[in-house]
Image 1 (cartoon, rainbow, N blue to C red):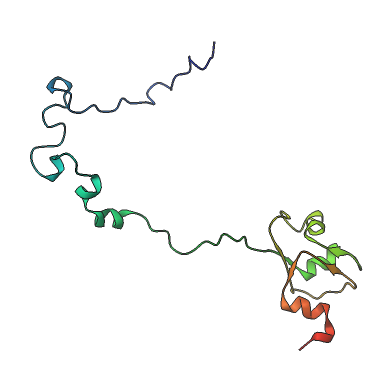
Image 2: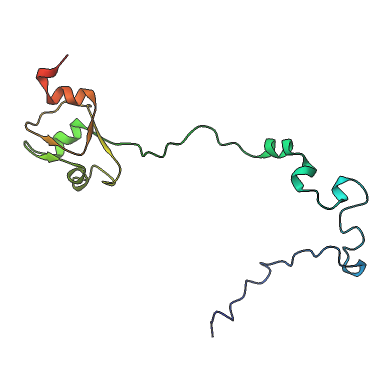
Length: 143
């Protein structure tokens, strides 16, 4: 019967740790695997001190660059909006998600100006827009 007290690790998956300094009969007595003299043989010397901190720092892999905690915007282009929406529709992250243009509504959305907007009276809310999209929405503000 399988119970919590009968569960054991797979055979050969665990090893007993080396018990050092328990007499000569153990095979690790006298110098306890440290050799004879020198700094490495003494007690109270940390591994970092033994190796030298410089070597440790040089060996550790360095992560290059910078990763922002802010998520990148999901991108939707105008030509895709022309295909999936009608005149007078409201465009929000939820409607874009329903249309299958987004993976999730939790990450911010940005509308980019690839293609030309052919629909009229679209209402955008909860989305960011590029400058070219804003120009297409407000033709009198073109500068």
